[in-house]
Length: 264
Image (cartoon, rainbow, N blue to C red):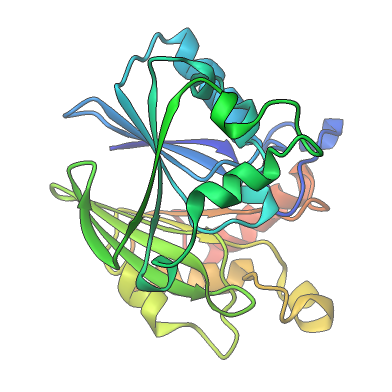
């Protein structure tokens, strides 16, 4: 399993010169299962534009290209109208969510609304690809892998979902948007237990969280590191970076993380 980050920024994209090394696009990951040569995309922030361009350039012709969503805040869906494969007439694209609390969501309506003519010149039904919208339960076999979904506290419980993806002997855990509102969420520790890679929200510094950002739905880098230590993960990637945290700021944050968890 390979993971490629196309967007690691939270809240809003940034493009100034001091944000180039870590990138200014909002959340989007590509998960490539090499054994079956299958690609799954996670979230559709502005990073999905470059993801789509690269898929086209690589001549990837996967009949069913699936996008799994953690939630639908703007920074996780705003790149979708610029995803090049969505304009291919012979392309099938699956729009997926997991979790019992998501069962009643009208997925098509969410994406159609942001592409109304007041907001965008091309409507969802005019893009070209064929879309399927699927709501799954808390635990499923998807894309040939065992996937567990966990509701996270992101303004409210179930505001976002984290995922544990077990593929053969490899475990990936993704928790991009969550707040440990009353101490470390034990469910997140369980979700990440012994994972080969944990991708965890770390938008704020501890000081930012204590003084201003508490209740805003995100974690600190210290909390991300604590989850990694307690869950005995092999590697930690902190993501969903604040738009005010430039490259030098994140370099310094990485140094602090590695003092506690060297493989950060």
